[in-house]
Length: 304
Image (cartoon, rainbow, N blue to C red):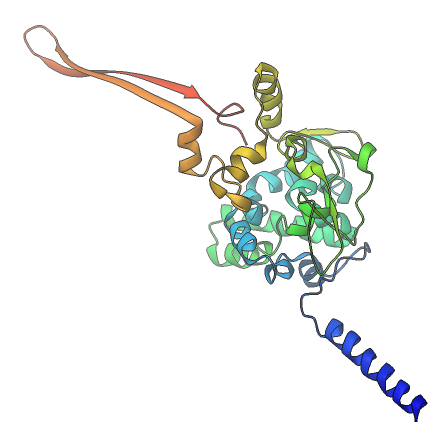
């Protein structure tokens, strides 16, 4: 009788503990690190929608950001690099290594794509550019709809690129962990605290001079250079995140030059306008305008 009661208790305990874990819909399936060859599988594996259930507000902020449109808003420039820069100017074959020189920032998870899939994504960018130039709106919208599924996702920043600014100190990120700037976190998935997410160096990796794995550097903009050379060197103390994320609860929208509110904060504008008339025998109305612009940002304007 005692053995039966003990057996019943063990069975009951097993189902009481295990079943809730198995039915928990909040479990986050993280990438395994393998290369993916299928486009739809690639999109689903790294989709930010996986994070939306627990982080709905952050997800909505991210949706408004340019990070969420990192591919479709850069079609012309990236496609030109693939069509002109690599084969004609550099006289190289377009392959994944060369594709990474754009997409390692615009689509960091491309590192988990096979060579074939990387070329497929590059071809989509080229196709979109051709359709736009041909004014074939139907064709362009069809390609754009597919490209819009590709962007800088939560996993890209909170894992793949998190330690690029200091690899010698932190090493390679664990593909099964989500890295956070918060020290105390309770989550349904493995988390690791890292201070790099709060540093300007974290942003500078892409918003400055990108150094590829083969040692070649690509300069898409000089934002981080002006930040360090003309702001930090002159006594500036704020990080990118302090202005573009934490101030006014901007969060994961990361507004920049496309946002009128933050542009007004970054640029002081004053104008003096004086009307007058001149001429001999006939008055000609004229106006004299003197404008003063003051850069209050932590970097040169414009930049990106």
